[in-house]
Length: 151
Image (cartoon, rainbow, N blue to C red):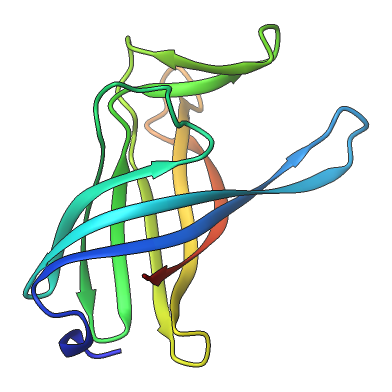
């Protein structure tokens, strides 16, 4: 997709992101979450906001998006106002205002047959030092897939 197909200005997108999790029986399950984005393109860069069905109503501040488009390659970061997590005892998502959200990194390409962007997302959610005197760290990531269409 050339950038001429996304001229400067506002564009609205709808899509889904998905991830895998283990249910209470230990079986791997796939969860898909719908989202919408309002993005303002200026040359190859864009910024805007998003809302998703999983966190809808959880934050009073906007969820921001910043990224770029290079021919058919797209890259952007989604930033929630605060970190959040699923509390198993409460059985719901909980906002953690004490910690910043690390940013979820999305990369992908335009699929002309499907007329949509699609790719993978990555979230670094934990980093631990491997030893008291070590400079090495073990980083934990959550990975998933995403897709979105201009509407």
